[in-house]
Length: 174
Image (cartoon, rainbow, N blue to C red; front, top):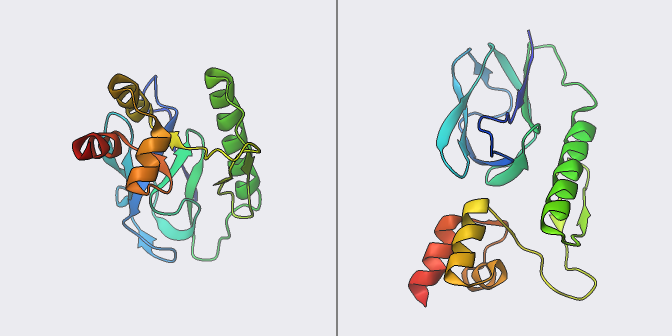
């Protein structure tokens, strides 16, 4: 039996989660209930557990990557089974839908490119401004302290998603 390990909507306000680190590697045999990865959301940190036994055939989300609900982070199958061919396309579609929803919610003009492998890369916009993402908790805290996520990312050299801890560290430096 195979398993697509998918980021689920574990809470009503959950839109994305961060794969903090992997506890397994491609090619490892796992049993149902084994921890696969440490997952972090705005409100909790936990281990993503395998629902089925098998071999970890492919990991789709690198460590420290933030992915939306619905994203396939890994595939577990039998020793001779290959992952479905459409997972990267599916992940690209999930990422695109997530970014479109975020743009509409925030009324932003974000530019993205989705390279092979399904991971997105941020670029500077046409006006040269750096586009920075942050967790909802980081956005709330930054607004409370009246600082921008761009300031935090630049000061702490954050290459990815700004977290609530990053904002607190930035305020500790001021």
